[in-house]
Image 1 (cartoon, rainbow, N blue to C red):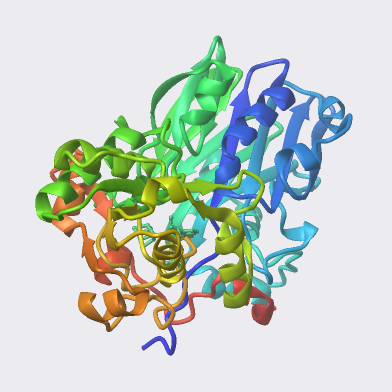
Image 2: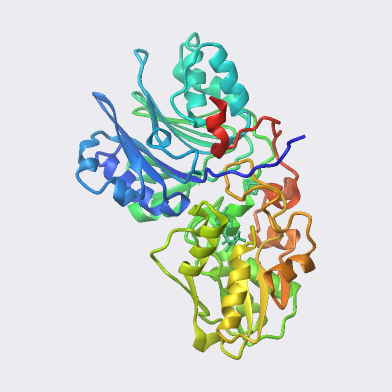
Length: 474
Ligand code: AMP
Ligand code: SF4
């Protein structure tokens, strides 16, 4: 039994390109489009005939590449990452892509997700003499690849290493001979393949393709290893596909509205969730407003279906980072205050429906209800375009510990009282699945619902180490 189920802090965005002379510049734009997936570190590694070249640092993409660094990254292939990390996962040594140089060939790796058996594998590798430089799971893969040096073909070594990992992982790996792309057997994190002229591109989200003028080709399949080199693209499996379990929170909160995941547009999915909510609850109100930015699509859907006009009731400052990046509860609360302001003229004297995409700790909802009432709203009805979050995520998404989640062990009425709303409604799990509308006939329409149900699609190890706890593993 896990003493305290911890949530994760490793949401990331990855990008890769093979076969373009401006590989570094294109990666820069691709990472910029993925910036919402992580704001604490960014890096790009390129490959030319001399080997691998790297530049990375802490901060936003345009801060890390603020000077001439991009021009020093020569070569026609690249991988990159934008990273979100907790306090303990910070530090330049953890910023990816990681580069491993060796006489048998250099290797660079970037990763999105969380490997649930990383601690076990790391201990095993350390007993065999591996010395780790970082706290990151990503390094485990590199050591596993090196360990299987007896296997002559590199792709077989990578396959063997990948087959030992459990959990959520979307990898981009750049070697001196090729770009390798891998997706975990459940396909928990999004990863799409695209084409830009003759070049191949890969990205966590398709919005990165739009900015560089690439066409989306398909999603990387669960358990698939794609090898791209000068001979073209070759697809293999390193594991049989398990039940597909794409992260529901990607549709609910993370992904950008202009991205498509497995052919489903995020804005449209969120709008359908909002429409469905309006059919699941009847509320007498004057205006509907959404919490910017991730809830606007659902709020528009709710308004369209209910006939209650949509209004801009809340404004978000463009210049404050996501509230979650602030480490303490106190700072988070200040962050919410700094970030959102009510539009008094819109809400004064009105019964307001406030749509948000999710409630995690309840901080945002509570503050917004208070803010709207202080601005003159006579009633505030909170509607949430996803079911209550009751369990932590072990697959790379920061939704905290189970004791911090407001909905764990509380009734809806108890939550309503805590956030001081006039009413509180969550979207039903069936409503969410049907509205997202994945055609999969597998369990939960091929979506992971673990944070809503506690039913995890993979084994969870008792010693699963979360990124923010990793310093203790060394
Ligand atoms: P909370 O204030 O703790 O209830 O957080 C809820 C707010 O955080 C909502 O407005 C969501 O848009 C946003 N949110 C949901 N999941 C996450 C996440 N994993 N990381 C950062 N923000 C999130
Ligand atoms: Fe996504 Fe929730 Fe599953 Fe984590 S537990 S992968 S946040 S759906």
